[in-house]
Length: 202
Image (cartoon, rainbow, N blue to C red; front, side, top):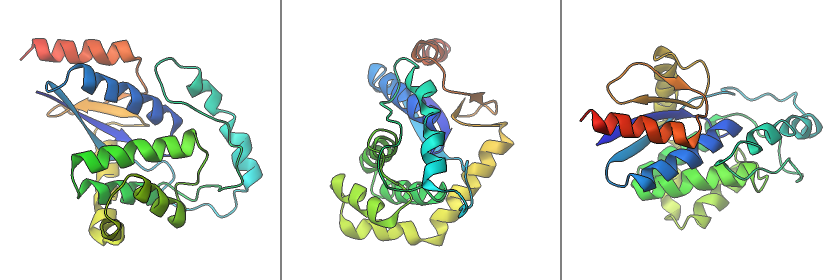
């Protein structure tokens, strides 16, 4: 079994592309490869000075990620939601889902990315996060875990771990047991060849 550790941020467009590609790799190598998603904080603190107009202008840069093949579906921001505050809230909700099991995490992980980049919903807003949780058909009481200080500590520890492993940005992926990270959203074929090579060494 190949176990990949992927450091990611829900506000990062390139992480959306990497998530789509790595999910496809997991499907193609079913039972032989697994991806564990860990937190990285591109925006660790809220920025109250950023306006919705500034944020809308920034999202035009998503067209670069959208032009990459085999990635996520992007839409330049067209709603009146936001701007998003900071990276922490969606990570806490994803961690709360993980406490319910791998399937729950996978549903929330995918839903957060598509809600933000495709549907232009503010995934740092508490009401939006509650709605996404409900849309993923998870038990309502499970969301309370997002307020557990232990989950915030886990998010911060994983971010620090990524930095210690040389992640200068995200997405960053490493093989479990190997200290070196591959930084950047790699093409789907690159991920495929990487996994094939690792499986051949086992």
